[in-house]
Length: 437
Image (cartoon, rainbow, N blue to C red):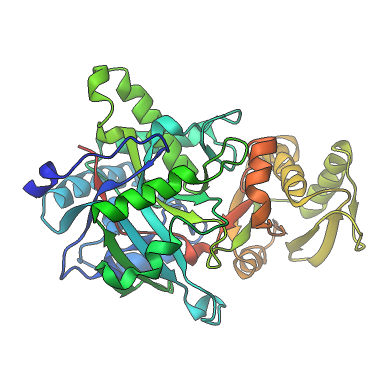
């Protein structure tokens, strides 16, 4: 691994996005067992993660270097965290990850088992380094790289604690560019046949498949940087965080702490100044915006709906069971069945905001000590989970992705958990890595 010391450092070019020193699994590593879905998926379905553990077995895997959020409250969570740190250090020194400098180009196809018919175009992304000086997760941020949703401060310390000790980062962060002219990623994807292929494999547990290529030619790197620099900004926004905002926010927190303790001349190329992410074009036909549904556990359904209707009225809206020319549909799911509801006069963002603001305070005003809320991807998954007694599920509509950048530029962050880039199995899988030490 001495070669990593001779590679260039991440480049500061004023865009906030840069080529990186990327590590990918060496030939012979089983990519299907190595790559694993983002840790913040299947939070209410620990059986998914147990299936992943059984499938991986003793093979090298990114699964050994993440802490699935489904186990954050498990009795052995502290021990799991220690194992993650230890496994990262061991993997960083093992020689199974090979370095190059530049970008990685990734083509993600989706599995028909997820309800797709295999006619959906692939999602194409560019793995790059995010300069954390150009990103700010605060709601009133004016930075060129911004979150799309509110950041929950309480969720940052556990992630930051791992990053402070981690030898490696494996990204599930996804950024979005507004590139209607398709000038950044699409040109290099069109000639991917001339690039060195890094991987080509199916992904575990119905995740579809992944192909990747190294973009390590200086001319290609320069062309991408120039294209990013030439993108028109929307209200000062160059890129928006589509997935993994809390991981990126934790990286920013660690960097802001670190930069205070090192000389200024060392800050430009310090590895903690950057975070690896996949950058996609919001106009990519392979990107779909899916709603993130809500489920309430420990709910008295009648009391819940009475409180919800009162809260909605206080927010200036009304719930109706009849189809209206204004507002967006919400469906309540429980053992009592389903019924469509509309919040009058509400856009999709406003509807999500009204629902979320109610759920944030529901346990305190009427839910009781056992009530809590979780966030679910997929209609079928929500219906299954909400079929048990004392549960309420809320199915929210999807956001039109063309509205994303104008909404951020105008109003700042969207209501928390307004949309998701694809269903749970379509999320980014951990695959590439980067050294933090």
